[in-house]
Image (cartoon, rainbow, N blue to C red; front, side):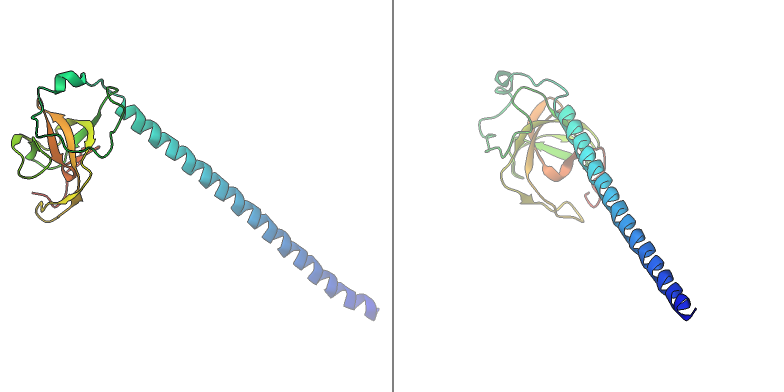
Length: 175
């Protein structure tokens, strides 16, 4: 009988060890499933964002390049960094984030002011951005942004990049 009683605690320990090993295996499998679902969700979110961006860029037709030549002064030809969309396919709407943002004929502070834009006013991104960035003091902030070519209020010109955004929101710290 002494042999039987010593065998019982060994069986209990063995069953407990097998139980814990089973829980550990199950937990690792469950973590792998969760990781896969997060990865799939991230991929689908990226696809949705890219689709929205592409849909936004192809929204409206641009006028032919010939009709823009009369609007631009000869000095307003800086080298563009990258076009937003293929020429003639459309434009992306941008919104003014600084009340009284100046639309200039050249991408620099000394450029002639063509008009002033109101807060949340929609302008058309013309597909050109300057190669370099510039730091401009806007009040409590000094962003380092490029100049962006836009069309607004019947003029085609340049605005400071911190002054426009894809969403209607006021730039905090600028006045």
